[in-house]
Length: 361
Image (cartoon, rainbow, N blue to C red; front, side, top):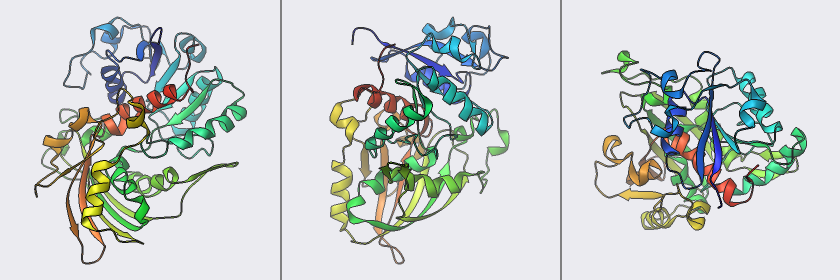
């Protein structure tokens, strides 16, 4: 690549936006050249705009401190400075839909961390190791938007990425019924313990909208590309409970699953340990070399010990056992703001670049 692609972060002052900034520091393919946020932050340097609100444990990269924050609503101005955009804004769903489509119509690829377009039929919702073929629907979307180079691709909900990869590796055995309880970190709400003291020594058994997303989004990812867009799968039947727990980062899932063709324990472990997807085949910069890591210890995975496996891009799993009601049960874990949010979106962008969907303007 003669030069790095110019990346813009729309919503760059929030927690996920900050994670994008951190992950793109020294990225071999992408360089942050523009940051946009609300009108309140516009006109300030990035360092000034997040003064006292930097939520990550790692320091703010020097290269972005002096970038002047732009008004995210000034689409043409922001688009002129970038080859692609990562979007992580806090707005109403219809406003996000309109904003992302406006950026796409300028000929700019948009990789979104938001939920607004996850069910738009011609917008691919992608976990790169699972459904890279869904990128084919971009051709339909470009026709609708009237652009040759712009499009929107979205990352799915952070909760499902703790357990969906482990089930996908076993897809050949046809999972039929799945019960999941997720134990979700407070960073999933954009919070730290300083912001949310009520979460200290507390568990909240409700996260608005999360259970529906956790039950339905996997079916879209396992769906098919058709002339009408992406049509979701009907199997497996998934039911979930989503619980907020006093953990800084890392979403854990307790999973019960039955299969049409019950595998042996040895077959499950072999599928998990050997699973590779398109990112591993292409050697993408953010792709974990070992996507799924199984722990034999009875007390693993643990959130604090294992959320950062493969730089936060891997999935940890353990406690695989046969069950009295379902075929098997196990526990799995992912880093919700890396694999589940900004890191997953960066990996989507890498896949799009490698497959020729993103080019320099």
